[in-house]
Length: 313
Ligand code: 13P
Ligand code: SF4
Image 1 (cartoon, helix red, strand yellow):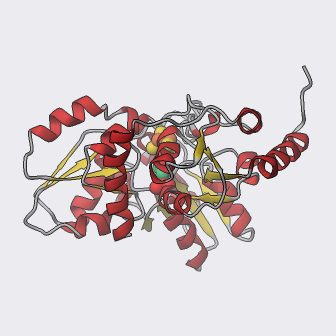
Image 2: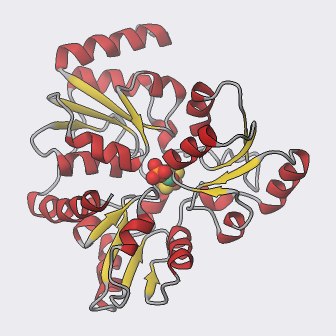
């Protein structure tokens, strides 16, 4: 077996992209070398929007499973490749479709809002999707007297409930293993060590972590804030993959990753996003597999909830 080095793999990927008329979309949480071969890098909202206008026969999604599904829902005529299908999401896993359907049945008359970090089957049960970039706008677009069922992230849900002051919002009890693990004690210690630093936090973190944030926002929102802010140092309370893009965009600023409770677990790295490697990408482009395949009826229903979101964004 020939073992290629990183630059050989990158060259092979570039050649295969041209040969197969393929485009690579990647999330900021993937490995830096994976981000380097992407044609478009973004957060979940930007990637969903970008998928619609891809001018290629093949979309290879370097990210987790639900993201590739979203691209396939929006581009059914294209071949959508998921180089590592085992790359799931603990948040999407915390919301099985059958249990979500039973939960929804208990709340008739509620408008169902689901975070895009869900399976296509859950999206098919949803009225309007949201991402962390637009969750506030999506919930605010619903008339105040219409009750809302929000899933699956309880932390994002309770944050939006607090911002809107809505009392008619029930939450599914799900969470992400990365964002739930940050330690308040260690974060406060870091703040004492870096008194000038701004604390930037993803809304999937627990409410007591959000309390100490200078800025709460999606991956793209955090990147934007760090660019606009006059501060030179930032304590970053989200998945550590974003640091590659921060250092690339703002080389003269300092980004300090916040530690999880158990620093030996590496929990501030999404183990699913990091499963995707250059080897997976090269082999997927070579064989044009594994491909995302979705039942057409489910796809159509999921498409409606995603398009409802895109219309609001
Ligand atoms: P973004 O919406 O910020 O891209 O977040 C995606 C995600 O998986 C967060 O854990
Ligand atoms: Fe899912 Fe959390 Fe990974 Fe995001 S960081 S993909 S929510 S497991």
